[in-house]
Length: 361
Image: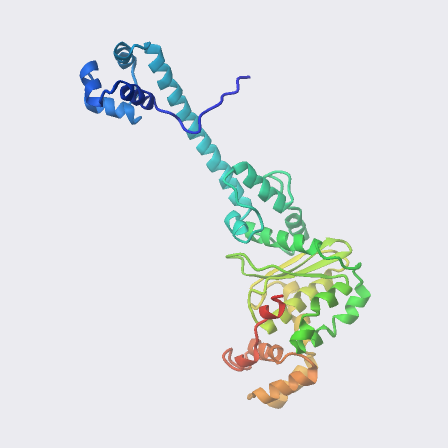
């Protein structure tokens, strides 16, 4: 099988012709006079816009002391090179299109999750390695697990990339085997860590001691993903949060929502992915997870009594006092009141602090 070595770019015969003219000190006008060809035709050949015909090849050979075959071979090689280049471009476009269909390549490069490369081969290798797959037609294993669960549906390459990054980060953490009994007991008091920033920072370690890996992965454009719960294996659950809504109350609600999923799926290893978590869900499983999260943060009886005593006026003082009695951050109370439409979203916003600075280290 012949192996063709092609130049970096196709070389038009006109470049060779120009070199011959320069070597003789002839202008294009001189050569036009010599060969009887129009000046425009000579110029078009030199810049590669006009092909050398057999008739022209004979004229060039007589004027420059070469064979007609020399010029025809140059022309043929140039046209073949142009054709190969166009085919290569088409192949490159096709490969890039497929690559971008399985991953948000530019965003992965921007975030440093993969390395940039001008080589399509190297870029493909980077994406395949990131997704943990052997070829472009193989779905990511973590994405496949979500689809098989029938509950967490990954419908875009960006969501697949987000979940895959969460898996990569989770595998870096070493935690003991998941203890369901201990988890069921401890999840009831986790909200107490919300009271202070210092205790909130302990949530990674607290969950890790229960066998749960908590990771933060910023959401990718157009995903609007808030959190996910999935399993690396039957004994290693993962909760990942995007911190898309930079509010301490949303952080705790989303965390409890994902932990609620683990309470329900601890025996079936079902995976979940949650987008726009503050919207009222249509899925019964998601509605149940929402309710469990609300009850874990604020016991329903306590919340009902609080509302009955203070409705319709919820002052800053009574909210802080209620939160202190529960041992939780007052933002959680404010968020619940806003969600229940007991106060406008503009009320008591100064009690809602940002969460990202807490975990910035």
